[in-house]
Length: 302
Image (cartoon, rainbow, N blue to C red; front, top):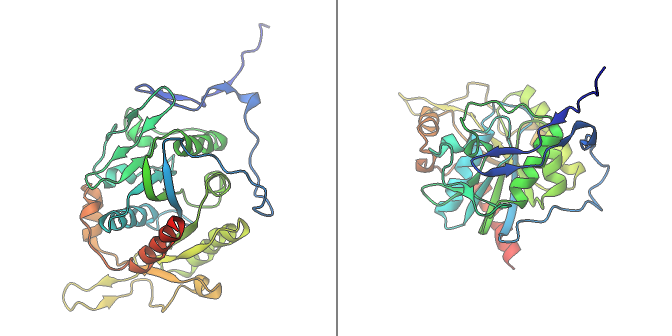
């Protein structure tokens, strides 16, 4: 038999001059990360040398389909309108939807700043975004990578993107408590997280896993955002609680965590996101979450 070929894991994607992580043999692949018992002693990944990033907020969920990316996009838009320089790091590598909500296709302003740096895409209102879908040849191309490779790309988005001067960065994470949330919590200086849920007991149980993970990592939970909380009747204007009426999210209340917002199931929101006009949405339903984030930004400035 001839010499056995080395099977390599593609750890560097090259798209239009952009380089995302280096190719190395699979046998040299980083071992799977395990959640530590405590946060102390973990060395954070340095930010890009041409960036000054204020508060870093993770947006998480225990499961998919609860509207986490929608909440991320709306929160970023509302912060930008209040005069805060805002950015989104789309860490949902295998299911990125942030660019589409802002009407951004491949490129979207993202470009190579140098051989080792990438410029983020910029939305109409000035929000800076980095997502893998801005670099892929087609936005429907699947990303079939192993966990450590995906985690490495997330760290490169933090380290190799020239973010510039940013007041607050929102990190849109994939659902669950796997490699990417662990990488973000360990490697990025996360100041707090917002947990997105929907008003069902089953979802609340799963959301508690995400809350437990954040507390294990000693990261503050700013609050729970209950999405699809109710539907406003188009005839009488009264709220209709499709999943049952609850005063507060049970899992959050048990842990003394604030409900930082309740968003209705509004067809106009979905239409705006599908049309790439999420920045046009106006709402006061996230005011509590916005207030908590802006308080963190002010603390960082002091």
